[in-house]
Image (cartoon, rainbow, N blue to C red; front, side):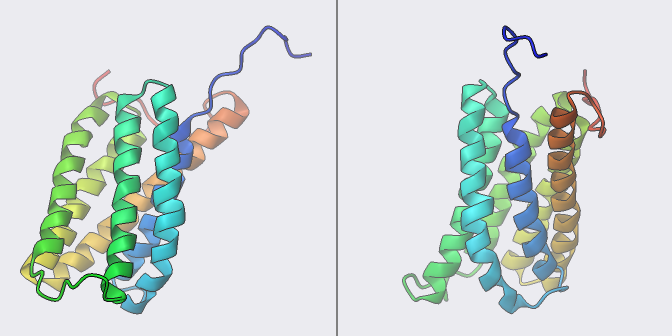
Length: 197
């Protein structure tokens, strides 16, 4: 019989945030890598808003309650990224905004997301190895996509798509591991120790 005085451990919001991030990243990366048609971005937009965006915002707010500065910053930031992506697509395709003369601006925005991610990656040296690997693949993904868009080099964007597939897959694995380990109440699926203990 469970001890009525035992307080259950709080749920880990990272499991929720990572699945929202990973799922959406994989689908968009399949398009960026050329494995799915570019016209498929219309399928990604509602997913970006509902799952990649909203779910990560919820996860980020839950991290606040756990006093996890990294989790809060990461999930709220990438939740906002997916809202930015989704709204940019909607506004541009419905002529609410005109980006026809934007030139390299979208590419530069992606590079700035890479700079943010590179800064967050530094903190992952003290976190689970899976989080380190997710960010290790995410910041170059942003740089490749950004440079490809800014310089008009589709090959860089395709490479960014392939790296994004790896990043999204790692995020999905991380979510699976955190959910499984919480369900079993012990480490079952490895996530690895920190690079710097």
